[in-house]
Image (tube, rainbow, N blue to C red; front, side, top):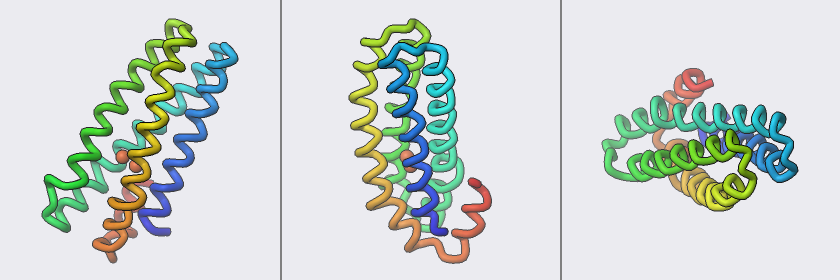
Length: 141
Ligand SMILES: [Fe+2]
Ligand SMILES: [Fe+2]
């Protein structure tokens, strides 16, 4: 499996759990929503961590591009993490409208971010890493 395949698949997994949480909030099934949201939150954090702690530094080392796409993606992660905190708060307050208000923008932002990574950054990673790919996948699995 390539880095691109592995990470793109994880994007889908994060989305699926998040969408489930959002659906449960819409139905105001707070307890189940809270469990699903916690899972989605942890999945997003794991995903960001795989990128920020392992893949991005490896890409930067290999290409010398430290002010390029990885920096842009890191700053987008900060924005998504901030929104995840807003969503968490809205859920704790059982405020459906507030949650769904943040949620719409969050989902659009996540889709755009993921598309940039899949079409640009992960594709570049597949090109620049050869033997390192396997090591990196082991590290993040
Ligand atoms: Fe990312
Ligand atoms: Fe990603």
